Length: 496
Image (spheres, rainbow, N blue to C red):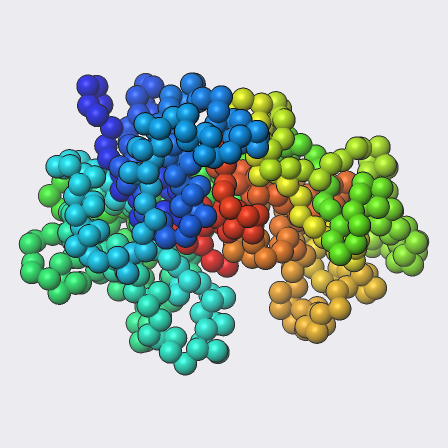
């Protein structure tokens, strides 16, 4: 790289920019290896986050302007921030585009990408086409409710990615998608086999005039020659590479046939845990929904668990260790002056892992760390399940609940008897990687309960972002539901 400019990156279906951020942050001997030339996303809030992050990257990481942190703290508006740095705003507007692939005329997109590449021959295309059609849960739901399931356009959005390959012939591309794509079928054929075939020969797949364009598809997890790779070989298990999340994703690395390059596979590393990733963040409480909220009200509601019959009678049962953890938590709850979090908080502590990545240049600030509202009944359940996980080193199942603590859901007994969604209250166990951050996190917190019983809540946006390995300087725009959804997307379209 001596004397060379960074390789340009085109990021499509970008979400809030997680995949592009990984490329943009990579350095060798303090020199940037890649530069995002264009990021494309259709969602307005995700695009707003994408543009703010592009603005951030216009500055040296060691010299982020104080106005950025003032905006992160809520002391100034975005308009005031942008007014102070108009050249950097212009560059961010040029890079981050709000465009819906599949609806924008192809010639416009082609011209835009050509303009951004500006004749560059060495560049990388990255992106994760929307995955709803490949999600196991989504497919089951849609087959039962939508007679036009087979014709849903989301089966074919990968072809928008394919058209960019055919139009611009990138030397290298990285395509990401969910594990469910391995079993997804369309018209009786496996989707993954169709996609792999099409990626190898884009011209033929699109029925365009053949130019001889072709790609070898490499696995990043298995050291095999491309011609020997099976679809399962493209599956990367994030927790095997030091990521604090059991996230399994398809990553397909394509290298143009005329290039004599053989990449190395990823190097495995020690497993990272939830506690290592988020245990340093400011302790906080949830708020109480549907009734007046205060610290004292919250304490009183949680403390009332001691009047429950199962709690009083459980010390000589299988729940004895769980109740001991509840007792410890109740003492802490009375001692700690826990606030309910905030969109911006002062913070100077250090994570147990990846501290140089998470906290680089964060200027004593942490953002998007606001607690969710929880119903009175769920606060007791959250305290129980987090204490159970602390006592047993595993998350709870419905069959582990005291009967009076079970939710009044119609399908609870089915969950107990048939093990159907029996883990609907899922604790992220402290000393293990988290489960996969999915779209469910934007709906409620039941699948993403904090491991600390004394906090008695679900994960905040920032904690979810830590598990997705977003740096703390990454501020998510929009309302909180949208923020959760963006973290779930993490640079691609993620689904349960």
